[in-house]
Amino acid sequence: MISDEDVAAYRRDGVIMVPDVLDAAALTRLRQVIAEIVAGAAEVTEHTDVYDLEPNHSRDNPRVRRIKTPHKVHPIFNEIVRSQPVIDILTKLLGPGLRLHGSKLNMKSAQYGSPVEWHQDWAFYPHTNDDVLAIGVLLDDCDLENGPMLVTPGTHNREIWNHHDEDGYFAGLIDPDLIGEEIRRAVPCVGKGGTMSFHHARALHGSATNTSNRPRNLLLYEVTASDAWPLMGVKDFDEFNSRLLSGGTVITPRLADVPVRMPLPPAKRQGSIYETQSAAKKSYFTKAA
Image (cartoon, rainbow, N blue to C red; front, side, top):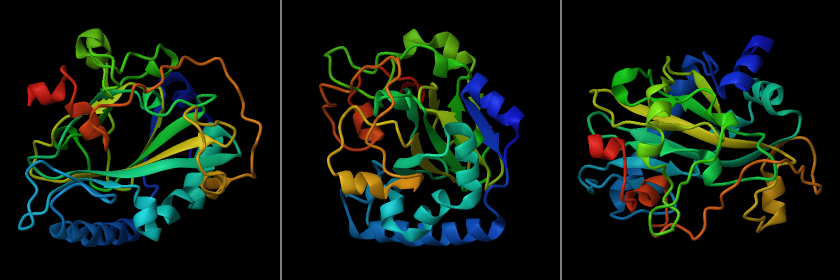
């Protein structure tokens, strides 16, 4: 589904958009499943292993900002990342051996969807090499008004910015005063529902509040080359191998000369990126909102 020119653009910019990866039938099915999962949030009042809730969530008016590890919540999310069109694209970008690192579904409901501050995914889960990317599946039509992901081209080949707060704890975001020029150069990842973005784990990105009257749901998968091993360790080797998308077991990690800042000491507020970033003293989108 992508050309050699697309691969070259990914190598140059650290991000590409691929339209029409999912068809209308797949989108309809996904939206039905998501609606059922969100409806279940009416039974909870606090964050759980499935739900990360908006601050104004209530049982009467369920508001979910993230479904955690959706590939473990419903089989449809596993089917998508393992589908042949997605595997074909990933193979051209990362090579024949592929592993799912994780997944999440960020939900920006109309008028109140929470922002995600500027960061690099690499700061959260550094590996032995940086053949690591994230897939963003647009589940709704996305434009400038409903809080698209913004990515700054070329930052995947630059430094790893400090994601720690002034007190030395991991904060999951970058001081916006350090990246003013990069923020100005950011481009929106917009498109019709069914479009997928592919961005390098070191690419600088963030997203603003949804100010429109339309939702913007973004399904995210983190995928690595199978010989990229997480520097924070492998706790369960069988589970680690169960996330292989293609290729066989690898016990010889490929080591590359890549910049790394470990996400330690851990964030004061554990949980999703929203919780981690909420403890930081400086922000960009939250302050603007």
